[in-house]
Amino acid sequence: MKLTRQQFDQIVAGKTPVDGSPTKGRSKTKAAPQFKRRDPYEMNSLETEFALTYLDTRIRSGESVRYDFQPIRLVLARGLQYTPDFVEYTADGSQVFYEVKGRWMDDARAKIKVAANAYPAQFIAAMKNKKSEARVSGTWKFELIPGGGGWPIGHI
Image 1 (spheres, one colour):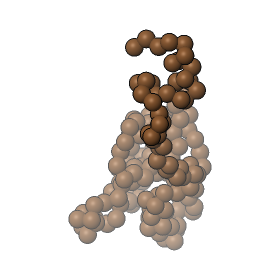
Image 2: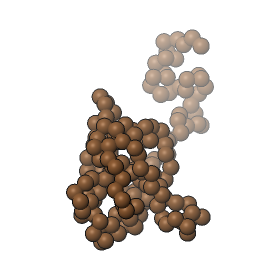
Image 3: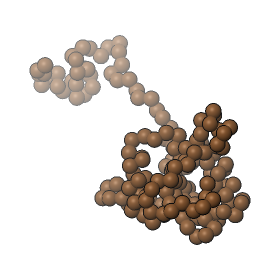
């Protein structure tokens, strides 16, 4: 479709839609739904549940000294970073990085594998068990991401 200068100016001014039909009686564009973006340093409900049901229990039992939520950003390559959900400081002085997932999306699994190979610490993915599995094996399913650290006996 070839536009005249006048049509082009009208489109730029917002007076005429691209298809050339008049704008009277119809909206120019539909407003995109507004989603409340959560603060990146604020826990979502799954992360909160993990902290309360698993990490706090480890602190009370003496296996862990403390944990922090997203305290560090690991540089994996130029322009590629990974922020673990939690860092747990265990009683023996080691660090364990936890990634809490409802499901794996995009490049998250690849990033945690690269981080596990690049940094000398344990990387563990925690996923909430389905209701049918929860009765048998507890609340969380853990996956050790192979790489830097070993799996201490009795950790999980």
